[in-house]
Length: 161
Image 1 (cartoon, helix red, strand yellow):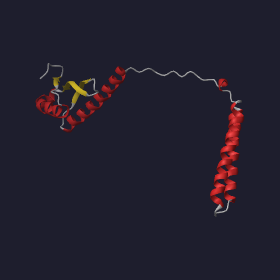
Image 2 (cartoon, one colour):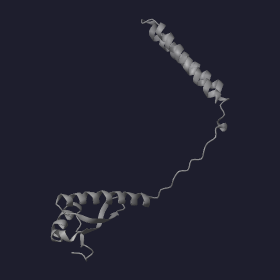
Image 3 (cartoon, rainbow, N blue to C red):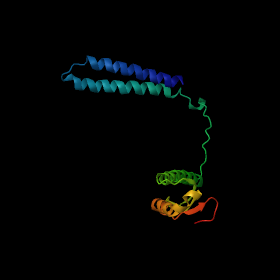
């Protein structure tokens, strides 16, 4: 590591020297020539510093820790996306129903992800209270308008309406 440290120190000293020399160069015709000379000085100093230290840098001494990369299957990723989508849709549908004064006990969505990555709702099941039985047509309308799927509606454990 000392070889790398030596190269860095040489770089710092070279930058300081180049800065000081460029401040002392007059602004007239010699500016272009001196800029070229300063550039050559910078490049030659860096090349010689690196060339000196290349033999001393031992990369084999650096211990590399083994990093385990977790494995993800595409199916797990698709399932996670489907679950997040279902959660977001469920909360949005709950909010839409609440805006109409309908309290859903539970909303269950089954989603499918196509080979092209398109997510679609396969099944929508909504559980409602007995008090909202008369609003099943409103519920069907709200759900169909938003997810283009006719929901199955259950009232307090009864069969679908």
